[in-house]
Amino acid sequence: MAVLIKSEAEIEKMRISGMALRKVHEAVKSAVRVGATTMDLERAAVAKVEELGVQPAFLGYHGYPAVLCTSVNEEVIHGIPSERRVLKEGDVVSVDCGVIVDGYYSDAAVTHPVGKISPQVEKLLRVTEASLYAAIEKAVVGGRLFDISHAVQAMCEAEGYGVVREFVGHGIGKNMHEDPQVPNYGTEGKGPRLKAGMVLAIEPMINMGSSAVRVLDDGWTAVTVDGSVSAHFEQTVAITKSGPRILTL
Ligand code: CO
Image 1 (tube, rainbow, N blue to C red):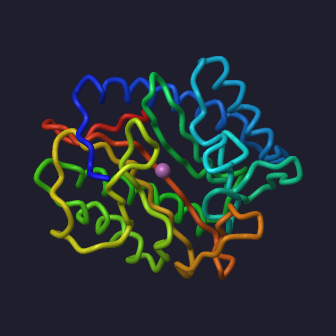
Image 2: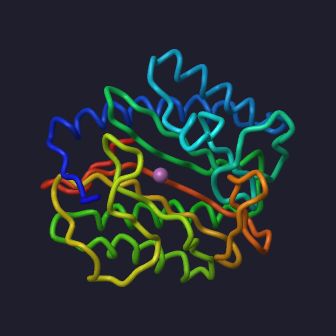
């Protein structure tokens, strides 16, 4: 599939989708607390999705069973909400969600602290989120795709963190996953040229230890092989003549 260029009108629709998604994320954030289950977060998301009248993007996608992915601690992505997973003080939970409005997808993720977390884990969250924003700054007309990738890799590897290789960001529009793939590692100045109208979901997945991940027997949950904590931040970003525009704010 070729990289699809979106018109200004399409980007406006995607922004409306992204604004609804942010409201879902805010509702979930309010539900994050010590003693909550990841299914409590799912219920908060379901209630907000219904209130807004938007369509969840993940539910049923390749058979995925929920509106949210809720990945705790060493879980990297695609953790399935569960009544049995109780959040405790010092945990982190990565919440990933997508919605569809008027046919247009938006996709965003954030890693939340649960109660008070260790300074080391706090730094992992801070650096991972900062690497997302460093990457977004590279989402400019005339740049190269791997400038985005390199920005994440350079910032995170400088701290000794592992950059997950097996999962990547992606183009997004009328489909959740479009070309191009957006890896979180790569060589500056390389890759396809960035053009106005490209919309990318940029999503660093960063481990405190080794970059290696594996998928659990549930067929979904990706975890770090070494058991180290992982963080995930994602925004849907349009490349425009006037610079990067985050659509999921
Ligand atoms: Co994504």
